[in-house]
Structure formats: structure tokens, C-alpha cells
Length: 90
Image 1 (tube, rainbow, N blue to C red):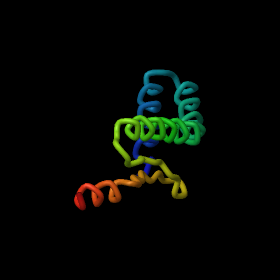
Image 2 (spheres, rainbow, N blue to C red):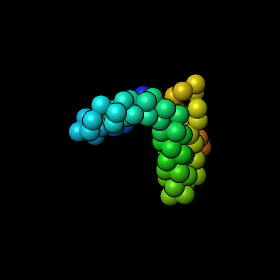
Image 3 (tube, rainbow, N blue to C red):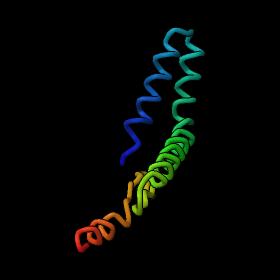
């Protein structure tokens, strides 16, 4: 999952909010929008990780994990096929 669209949306929202201010406010927003990317990525990944843990607690067997692939996030479900094949054999 590419997080870039979400980060870009945050940047656009910050720029839009700052457009109501003066030039100093717009310049500050521009600097902050560049600096916010690492923190925003971490916050989104933490939220996804919490979501995966919560979903896993509601599943009977499969485990949902969030893994990093460079700057992207991968959602991995493990144990799902084993449970399905065991049910099919019974």
C-alpha cells in the first residue's frame, strides 16, 4: 500500500488551511508540510498496525500483519489457507 496519496492529501489540506493567512503563515505551512511526512507515515503505519491487531482478534485462526516494503506498507494475512483447507477436508 502506497501511503503517498494520504501524505499528499495532508500536505494539500495544510496548504489550503494556510492560504487564509498571510505570507509568513503560508511559508510556515510549506516548511511544515515537508517536515511532517516522516511523522505522518509513522502515525498511519501505527494506525494500520493497530487495525491489523484488532482484526486478528476477531478472526478464528488467520493473522493480519502489517509489513514495511521500503516506504510502502504490505498487508499480509497468514494462516487463512490452512484453516480453509482443514475445513474442506472435514
